[in-house]
Image (cartoon, rainbow, N blue to C red; front, side, top):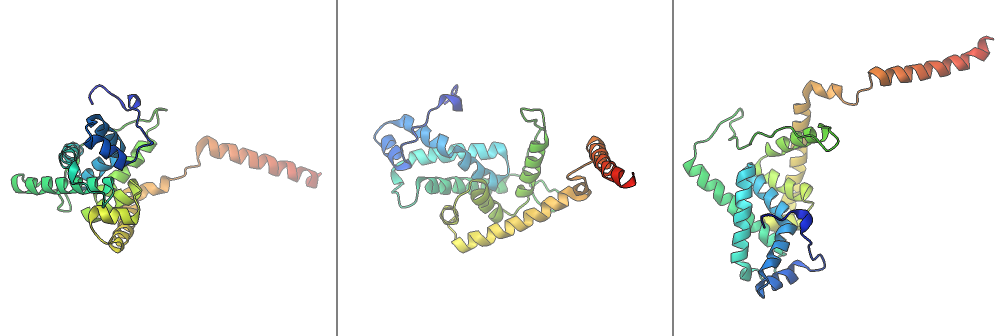
Length: 232
């Protein structure tokens, strides 16, 4: 797929996952790319939720796709293709983490957790603002600090917007467990975001300088106008 951008790819949206899989099984191998374009981000995000590393998540996502291709004949349709694919990605990510735990020394940060984050350079939006990217980075860091069982549920439910039922099927847990973990993840994120904001929260919604001057001038002008007849 090298040399082709997203803008060059036209997905046959009318085809369902089942229909595309059947096309691939029938020999139209190029149709497999349609599935990749459809679920690449989900697979990557799920791997990233387990491994907390961009490069490792990309490697695992690639391996998951290759494994899905190699075992495509084993998908029988009892679960949706995306659910089956997510399970493959999860098992690949867990296997990678177990291997690394055996061969790599732990890098301990404050709090005793292993650091797998890569430095992220500040990015500006198209209009030159950085506020949106800063908020996103703050949220990503808070999500990364969650325990894995909360993090994976949060990514699937909130980021990928999967239903409770589909999330439960992907993770092979009960729907009640999904609801409990999501509730706890949200509560933990609220605490973390407020703690990370710290005294800076007092700087939110500023109304100073020229804006304050303009309002003061407008209000005083109106007051002065209303008071003038009474004093005359």
